[in-house]
Image (cartoon, rainbow, N blue to C red; front, top):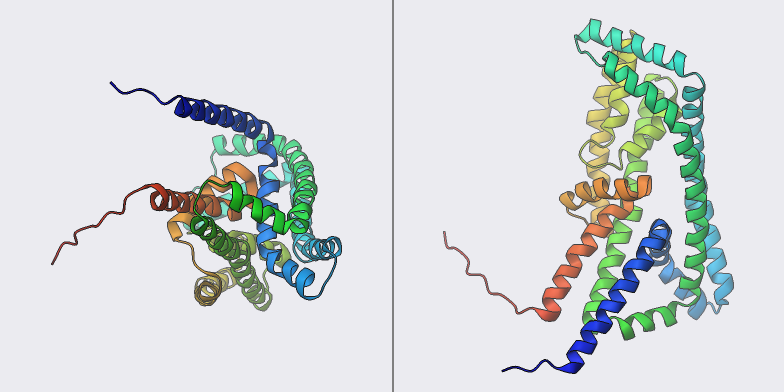
Length: 344
């Protein structure tokens, strides 16, 4: 008859208490998760620069962290704020003049239906769109407040991560219950994922947006900056990509009777912008690493639902890290399997 080890029971009880406290803290602080993920992302991008400034150039940690954080604010957040401002002005106009906008949309849908026999809007869809316009303003204001709060908390966390780099990494190596080689594996993979998603994806999207902008200028498309922003943001999304920007623009041109411009936008989009995506993706994959397309697709879907727009970056990272943790668990605790290959 086996006897239960009292130490095992104490260990299990203590572990359950830790899990319970962890769940409670997570539920109370889950709204700060985007800020934490943002801090981790910027930390991975700035870590090497921070080490060079502190250990090679002998800068004070506080000054080095402040300079890097200010640089990230000017280079990353200010341009994003400018793009969002342009989109916000369009959204604000649409909400203020919702009746005129809906009338224009109905006229546009009628032209498309007459020319191409495609029915875009029904009475039910129009009612849903009106309801969406009525409820979007509070959501935008709340999102703006949450975004500003998340940015402030993100930089607060990031400051301590940068100034306490050595202490932080020593703590992780000491208290994470994994082999040192697996902790290093997590660090290397996380660095690759962050560079691939936080740098690679936006750079490819921006490159496609700039190429599309050149085409819009040459062809003479209306409201060029607005469609440039839409195309750049759409290019970050998997599967559809930048087509979600230039295809609607071509439909607008068709509806306005500018058939040749609509055809030119479609041709330029599918040929030139599409080639740009492939060329830049191949180049950046060699430099930054690649993420499996399925991870990107499902990561974007999950990430957008969890975090909103920034989920385009964080979603794939979370899924890839989950798969990595499964590999590490197998490496740490599981027995290796030998698969018999089937001979042809």
